[in-house]
Structure formats: C-alpha cells, structure tokens
Length: 195
Image 1 (cartoon, rainbow, N blue to C red):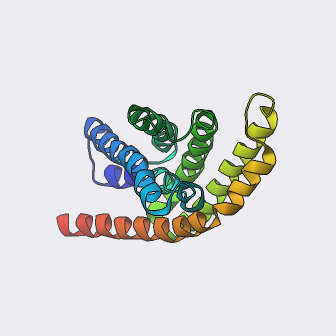
Image 2 (image 1 turned 60 degrees about the vertical axis):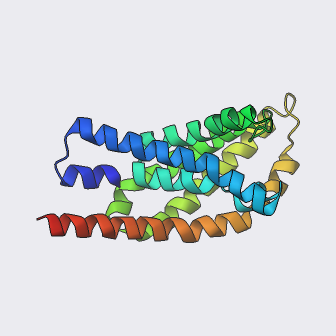
C-alpha cells in the first residue's frame, strides 16, 4: 500500500527506503509496547487473548507489503524478547520465541501479499487478515507438531491458545481495516490536495 502511494507521488528510491524504514521501526516499537500495556491491564493471559503483538505486525504487512512486512514480523518478537529480557521478564518466553518469529513472519508476509490490492480497495484488508491468520496459526501448529520432541509446547496447548485468541482476532479484524481505510483515504486526499 505504502509503496504504491509513494510511487504514485514520484518519491525517489532513497526517500522511499527512509520512509519505509521509519514506518517499520515505528511498527516494531508498537509491537514491543502494546503487549506490555495489555499485560499490565489484563494480566499474563491478556497476551494470548488479545494478541497485542499481532495487531501491529498485520498492520505492517498490509501497509508495507510482503518483504518489509516480513522484516517487521521477524523483528518484532526478537526486539520484544531483547528489550523485555533487560527487565527480567522476557516476552515472548525463550521457548516460544522461535515459533513466534516464524508465525509472525508468516502473518506479515501473507498480509503483505495483499498490500497492492489494499491500496486500491481498502476492504481487501479483511481477507488479508483472515488468510494471514489461517496461514500463521497453521504454521505455528505444524512447527510445534514437527518439533514437539524438543519443545515444551504441544499441538493441544497451541490449539487451546488459538481458541483463547479469538477475541484478539476479532479486534484485529475490526481495527486493521479501519486503519488501512483511514490511512488510504488520508494519503489519497493529501495527493489530490497536492496537485
């Protein structure tokens, strides 16, 4: 979405990279901060219920596209783990970190595949979210099934976590389209006013 808008405005490649880098860094920062806020407000189970790291990552995929979104998806749990480890309470937990890196990477990658369509039709964010959710969660379950001998997670545990996360998915399904529609309309309006 962002790439299309920057291209339509004839933004130079170096400036595009700078803008995308700043947006990606902001999304990663939000991916670290939002889970902390949710855990303070809703307790330890709040993360599994409301999926606070997933929201910015899916927004990142929809806005930034496939490869930049993938970077955000991979970096978000790594940066969160690094920052929260400094304060003695690593999130996500080390045992879950590799799974979340892959899962969030898939979430962002898949939602990013819809980015160009979202810039034309903001409502496409809805199927992007559903597809990203199904692909990300299926990947998570598959990885746990493959590596269950070396992890304390089981397919049953992951399935229960997925069921717990339905409120978060609904929140994401409402917020991401609203954000993409508003951002898309704002940027299109700015473009029209700039002409």
